[in-house]
Every structure is written in C-alpha cells, then in structure tokens.
Image: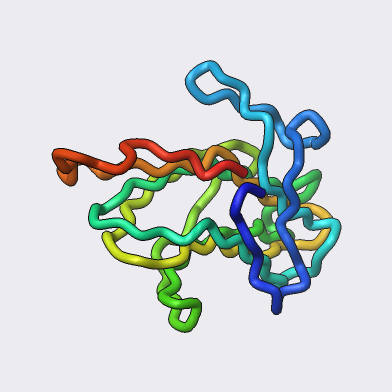
Length: 166
C-alpha cells in the first residue's frame, strides 16, 4: 500500500487488488492502464461498516490539488432497494481531531474523477469508506495524485506532482 495505513479500530478494511483480478471494469488514464486499486468489498462487511485508509503524512506550505478516481457499484440490484457505498475525505490533525473535507458522490457502476483542494499545513489525509448494501455495493479507489494547486506556484517547489501509490 506504499505508505498507507489503516485505522485499527475498524475491522472492515481496504484491500489492494489488481484490476486484472476483479470484476470492476478496467480504467485507463491518459491512455495508460491503471493496474492497482484499493477495494472495499461488500462481500466482507455489513451495511454501515466503515474502513479508513490513511495516506502518508502531509506537510506543505502550499494549497494542493488532490485528484482520485472512484468506482461505486450496485451489482445486480435495484437502486430503489439498495444503497451505494460512500467515500468521505477527512483531514486529521495529530490523529486527534478530524475534519470533513469532501464527500464523494459517484455514479453507480462507472469510474468518476474527483478533485479537491487541500489547505496548506500538516495533517493526515483519510479516505473513509462506508459500506452500502451487503453483497452488492463495492467501492474502489485508484490513481490518487497530488500537485501544487494553480495560483500557488512558488519559485522553488519541492515537487510539482506526486503520486500516492496504491
């Protein structure tokens, strides 16, 4: 998981999977196929279960733009009787106080791109998935990228683009 950790008090967990080994449709970004994703499988949890994936600690003097791709499925079920899994993005200061930054809305059974501006500062970035209907509502996360937000370019940035490998 390349530096990612999970919050230990949740028994439900994200699993790194190859897109080749799953039923989730393949995705290519700028013509390059994505090979791995983080999967929250509805076969391993109950509705309302939560799993958190914590990105490596961020320390920045600039606003950053975070982009990621999200897939939310409803497998062979009517959306009238089933609920989709959801993803929220949290900022955590010293792992003591967390703030809701973004709630991702994904279209069922398709990959969607999300972009969020992150503030300057020191914090953990937490991807928190909440399980929808059991057995039919998988959630997948792929291609998490960071770059310095437009309008915040410095004369000597540490990195203009950073991939948080899954």
